[in-house]
Image (cartoon, rainbow over all chains, first blue to last red; front, side, top):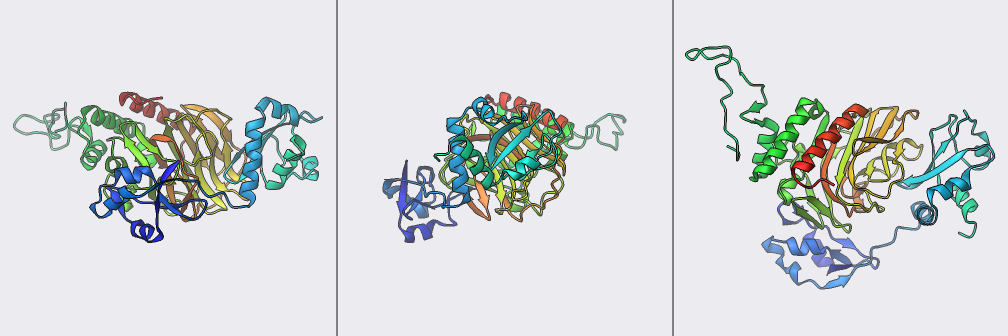
Length: 159
Length: 285
């Protein structure tokens, strides 16, 4: 993706400034810490004070990675689940001897799991296996990073 | 007067005589001429001149008022007019002021007659709606009309202090509550498309649900969420983490609302109104 590279001084000039009515510049950094604005900001700039942006060099932009943290770990696991497992396969994997059905999805910075069962289950066994759980069936079981790792270790111990 | 319409006097003959007209308005307040006052003010603020767009806005306003949904709205962004200025105004309060929750756009996006195509790199909008100060803590809703199919790891509406969230991620989740203790979240049933009209509603502290195109997608009725919202402003088109945008949306959005909690019946009604609105504008998906 081609974006338009700024010097630090140019970035400082643009922050807080309008490039068109109701529209402000929003310089962002790439993976190496260089500053960029988007093609739309350049193309749509009608502010006479900043017409110089139309002469900026177009450079391939690589966004910065998500910092090494819990978010990144969970994203990796989630990406694996989404890419490699169909819901059917996943459910097949996760139905246990008690016929508990565990579905997965995610949001924000955590993995979350729906746990469904025809029984009014006691989740104590899951707690012993590393799950933090609720005491009633059909509810959203709180998703935490250790659980994501636990489930992944069942699905694919090599990751 | 607006194109295609003829102005009518608000004080006419009903209840009176030719020589002694009625002392009371003979048409409902807020229905001057053929236009709803919300539509009149919005059209005046945005400078929209196309008669089809004016009619669509007018019908939208009428429908929201007549169903009582207008009272549930804090902000309505119809994204009509095809340019940043027109797209920035809030139908509920179309003043050009932060206090009216008029949007300020930042970074790259493209405005057109079909809505706002967010760039996915640095484009987002500040709503000035504060999750703590402008919304009740016991109920709220977020809604987005997406013309884009791709779900992606993106945020469409968000405020987030790393512990408490209010957010709508199309095709993924509606979250209103505490991310650490896991209260307040619901997940949309897995879908391969983000296209359509999505509503996440927290009707009260123990009832939350998500709708897509007027159909209940998912619900939680057992987890109590009494978490206070973060003291942050909602962003549209990006995640707002303590005031810093990230995880930008690359979707084309054609309608957004932020407001009080909606019942399931109200979600169905709102979905019908928005579908009619988009169809009138020829940009329904």
